[in-house]
Image (cartoon, rainbow, N blue to C red; front, side, top):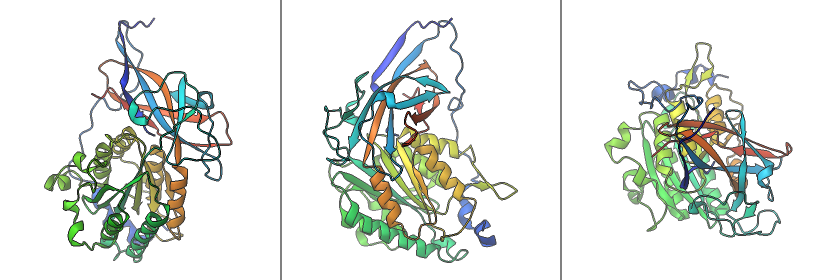
Length: 404
């Protein structure tokens, strides 16, 4: 029989889940440069401990878990009006009771449903237990992070990669001109054996256009060199405070895994859902039979960091349309793990960018309570489905618990 000497409820600091092989030449691309570094990152031994039965008299911590959940129909339209009973959530195959489901949007009208009762801002902390579905009266900000995995050095081995990268940049700039909402914040980064911050979060379309051009072409203007970037507006959200400075940024992002892990940590203080738009040819390692496999030394810490920071990864394949390659599985893997989406064989990137903007225009913040042993830290996997199988649900795969 399990008894608990004490139970602590953490409502002030809830866990947030603001939820051909490419030809023979491709197999020897320098993209493999970042997959087998000399010194793998240290992984906390407790990070992936399995859940075990609590011993007699053990202390537990009862915390409120917040999951951001996207719900759309088959056409990608955001669905309104769902209640807690419509969400089926489980931890370790054990169902948990959903206590509330609040809807947040970056627009005044998503569908035709009226605002019911005011919902707390995601920044306000815990949701009221047992409350029905509500629609927030305040517009929720959206965060987009463009990350371009630079292909200029790979273009010799696989001609056309640079052209696709430049095309992706132009399509992203076009989307900023036409699909940018008043509540949107956008940052631009690049990766070329190290992470580069071209533009921290801003709503300045011109500054973002310059940053994207620099990230995709390598041409820098005087005011847009990566090391000089600062938030464009006082009080604006920012990634730079959470990133190492100078040489430390280079030494700590020797692999794209580490770069994305650090990016997750830098984005964690920002409350709300963050959407990482990753333009790449993929990453990972291949088996002796030429198939992709995730390297748990690097993939798991990256996925857990992004999940814990509420960062959903949307991957855009830079290889030419019709190209089949094993690293496509890596892109789909990280997107699925973080509640994002993988786009392949895109003739143009405009359509996929519009789809991401449409699908992320509103989300539910689903709340439930979870128990963990006091003093134990780790990553809890979560599964979210819907009572209505006709609807599509996208959510995080888990959250960290026991963090300070």
